[in-house]
Image 1 (cartoon, rainbow, N blue to C red):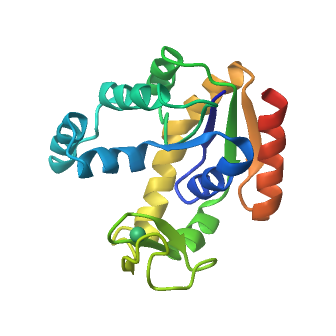
Image 2 (image 1 turned 90 degrees about the vertical axis):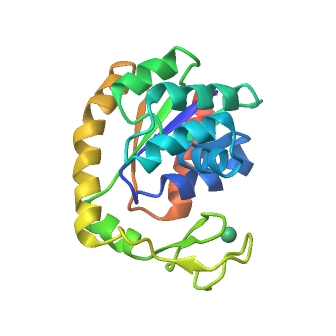
Length: 206
Ligand SMILES: [Zn+2]
């Protein structure tokens, strides 16, 4: 079974998905992490993706779909998609390679996102993401790398990303609502309550 996590940047998709891996048995599939890994390992796909990124262009859907397809062939129980799909075109392409059982729609407001992303710290070495609200050390617990704040995690760019997300994703949410797959979750709630609510949803569609 496959679940999609939708929500603006900073809604906590990645944190929730990674915390649900153990209890659901589903793999956490972050297309952003996968891309970084392909690039780091200098695979054919990674080299191709890097060209687009270096030119400041978006990585084309076909390339992402190929990467997702590869990854899906290695999963047993299924995956939780984080950061993909972002558009209806991508959702349709995804429907062509697998079945989606539920869509978790994390809703929040721009001010909450500003607070959350403002506290975000990334690892220089492995790209792991932390937040000062739950991780106060200055070094990565996975690899010992130094943590830093991303240059574009400013209020202005966060607002812009939020607006882009809303404009881009509204049709996507409608697309999945028509299929009766959407489950709305308030992203501002207590983390354990959110985990319990999403676990129950995943259990009910299994
Ligand atoms: Zn690290």
